Length: 416
Ligand SMILES: C[N+](C)(C)CCCC[C@H](N)C(=O)O
Image 1: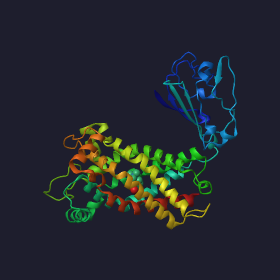
Image 2: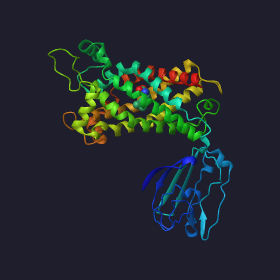
Image 3: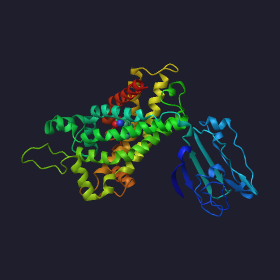
Image 4: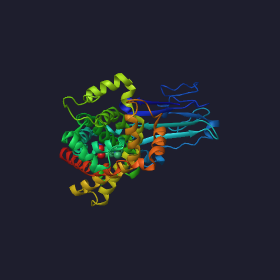
């Protein structure tokens, strides 16, 4: 099976799944090869045709039966005839699709499945792409980040080192040994990276919602999107930001785990002198893929839990805000705080694994993969290992995400 992303110029873009499809002839689309066994179906959406004998066994779901695509629901899909063929559907000229259009065709028992997904941003061209969401995401993320970084350092130490007796012990020892600056180790890089990471998260989330529901940030108060759409948009944002976050997070975790005090004559030199040195050393010692160590665990951690993050936030705001109004500052703070907690509570088990995978390979490679890391961590330390750092994660999550959402909402209202 192949996967591709196609740009259809003014028509929008489409996401394609290619599947060998025996006996299927394709219609007039530019990339349709009637004899081919294996089609890219992006253009086929305009007039795909199925031989009559196949059509009987073919089930077709089009987006008119899907919630979230009102235009299609109102516009019955015309059917064009061809000799011995039956079109799945054709798109009426000038149809604006603001939702998803998707089609499945199945060739009976054990047959080959064709799945076609199509998105168009044609109808969105009139609306502005919410670029401000990216900027708001960045600034609000930076505010939250500075506030939360000391908690984060304590958390990473507790997760990866066994010498501390608890949160208080860890804090006291960091302060005594490394001064206040010890809490801010590895922060410069996340501050720079938050520009990319949080703007990808909030920007993709908001744009995904715009594609799914055709409502902008402002309109969403009057027409709230379904929780399914919020969750999907959050997961999409989480999935994409994980790849931007991975190298930055790796460097942060490696620097946070250096326990040597700063620049004291005669004391042992830390392995990495700073973020750039850390990045360069990882690149040299472990190759470019080394910079993405732990990325898989990070993706698993962030994709569902950022769906939970936005669902909790929107759900609480909705609950405590009169119909059609903007949520008050207190509501945003509380909803943002709880969104952070809900997301971190569910993310903590994989957060532990992620941090361990990122530290793996520093001296020698211990784990064969995410699963191996989970199994050996549980074998050695019991199930409790999955909850390491849970208290500190939650304590950090409330203020960080309360101010993140507050600044995000206010920046957007200010620009709106
Ligand atoms: C998905 N996960 C729980 C990992 C993070 C969710 C919250 C993100 C926020 N920037 C923060 O640092 O708290």
